[in-house]
Amino acid sequence: MPKLIIIGGGPAGYTAATYAGRADLKPLVFEGAQYGGQLMTTTDVENFPGFPKGIMGPQLMEEVRAQAKRFGADVVAEDVTAVDLTVRPFKVTVGKREETADALIISTGAGHKKLGIPSEEKLWGKGVSACATCDAFFFKEKHVTVVGGGDSAMEEAMFIARFASRVTVLVRSDKLRASKIMGDRAMKNPKITFEWNVEVAEILGDAKVTGVTLKDTVSGETRELACDGLFLAIGLVPNVSLFKGQIELNDRGYIVTKPGTTETSVKGVFAGGDVADWKYRQAITAAGTGCAAALDAQHYLEGMEAGE
Ligand code: NDP
Image 1 (spheres, rainbow, N blue to C red):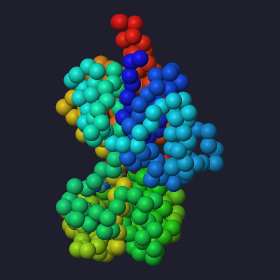
Image 2: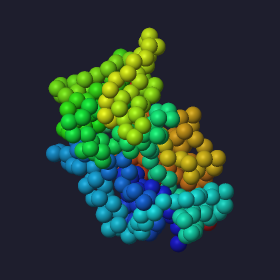
Image 3: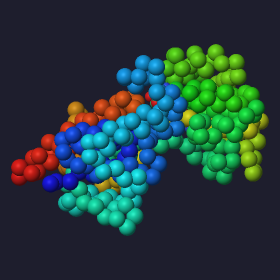
Image 4: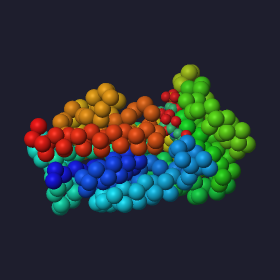
């Protein structure tokens, strides 16, 4: 039987696995050591259809994962270390283990974007974080800054405000990118204030964060703001390092798919979810393109079996 491998275990990967499993393709899924994707570090998901009262992100992923397993997907909690798309069948390496695949679905998702300043690396885990659900607890009665003006920043700020005494959101322009409902909620929170037109030029501190140097994006002036922690919520970068140089990426670094399909520039390789979607980036759209990738892969493999 032609073999299908799915790389990535988020909403796209598990949905692809469910559809491929139900088509009797017995997919092998490398979900990654930290499976589940971005929803594993989210709290309430209020906009996934079918859950009118909302559902916790990690619980939703456990359910989707269990659904994939129910239909025969072989789900492996390991990270793929290399991929060779120049050979047929494709080669997928996971540490010392080597697998081959006639068709491949890439659903490796996206990760947190960073500021790219040296002090960020130095103080990572010492007051700098990109996961409020993981780390907000450590900032009880502290002053915390959150960088970003999107829905993630609003969500992070509101979650941190449950613990911290004060949260300052640092926005680089004079307006939010967040949806109105999320922006309004954050603005109504008495613990949350906003600083507009500011960029983080430096994070201050040696053993732990003591403050930030802010640069005014209009006047160029700099000033210091004392704080105990800094959370990044400035968007995402696609996880494409395994495929660079082997597959076409767009100018934002996301995998290019042929319009109306999940086909990539390499025949037999399909992409679904955030790794190929810079625009919508929702769990439900990831699940949708994961489904489409499984259907496209199924037709491709059927054609292969028929000798086309
Ligand atoms: P977004 O791309 O929507 O927003 C990123 C924010 O970070 C923008 O305000 C952007 O500013 C700012 N930013 C980017 N780079 C920098 C930088 N170097 N320094 C300072 N600020 C910077 O990303 P999100 O992660 O917020 O959201 C991603 C997607 O997930 C969206 O579609 C969002 O709707 C969705 N989401 C939905 C949630 C929900 O519905 N519950 C919760 C969280 C996310 P600028 O605007 O100037 O570019």
